[in-house]
Structure formats: structure tokens, C-alpha cells
Amino acid sequence: MCASSFQKIAAAALAAAGCKHLSAFGTPKSLFLYAMVFSCAVPAASQAGVECLIATSKREPFLVVQVIAKSTTVASGTYRLVLLTHGAGGSSESVQQGSFDLEPGSDRILATTMVAVSDKVEMSARLQIETDRGVSQCGLPE
Picture 1 (cartoon, rainbow, N blue to C red):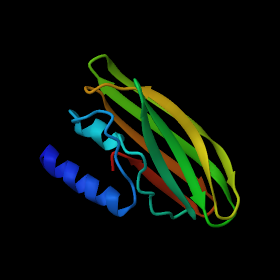
Picture 2 (cartoon, rainbow, N blue to C red; picture 1 turned 180 degrees about the vertical axis):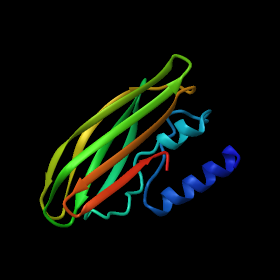
Picture 3 (cartoon, helix red, strand yellow; picture 1 turned 45 degrees about the vertical axis):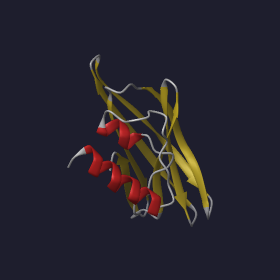
Picture 4 (tube, rainbow, N blue to C red; picture 1 turned 135 degrees about the vertical axis):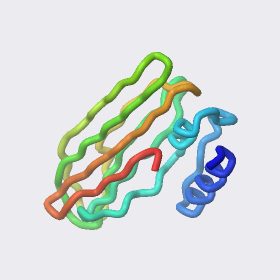
């Protein structure tokens, strides 16, 4: 799939979900980076009764990554966020994990991290949320 087709499909999917992409980079030069520069992301379907969401925003020269859990019922569990970056300077992996409690109808930021990015950096993020009802997973790029 060419970059133009990818951009059109991604923009249409996010517009349908009520999301918008940031234009901080102007014309994106990396498909992975383009996929990461959204002000919100579509939440993953939940098997755990808890939706997971990875939201990003740009604060030069960083990409701010927030992982969020949402629940319509009381929920508690654990989360694990894995961020992978690859660029000319090498590769890195960052893992953040912890536990959480949610009240009915609430959402909570589980973790916030800042990643130095450039046009030549590829990045992916995976979030796994586990409760006594099951596991939910989401990631970027999807």
C-alpha cells in the first residue's frame, strides 16, 4: 500500500471515530511515525471489561504517549506497556507496568512517557490490560 493510500484510509478511519491527526510534522516521511502522530486512537475491543487506548501528542522534540484504561464497571487489574523504537542510532525497548483500579464509568491514565523522535525513527507501542475478566490489548500502529 502506498503512503498516500495509507494516509487516506487512516484519516478516514480516525475521522469516523471522532479523532483527528496532528499536523506538527507537515508532510510525514515515515509511515510508522505518521501512524503515531494522532491526538487520539481508536480503543481496542475489550474482553476484560476494560477498554485500552493509546493516545499521542507532539511536544517538540518529543512524542508524548499516554495509555488509558476505561471501564463501565468497577475494575482492577494490571497493565504492561512496551515501546519499541528503531532509528539510525540503534534500537531501544521501554517497558512500563503496574496495577490500577477504576470506578464505574471512569477512565484513568495509567502511564505517560515521552519519546524523542525524528522523521527517521520508527516506533511501535503495545498495551496489555489484564483483569479477572480477561485481557484487552491495543497498539500503535494498528
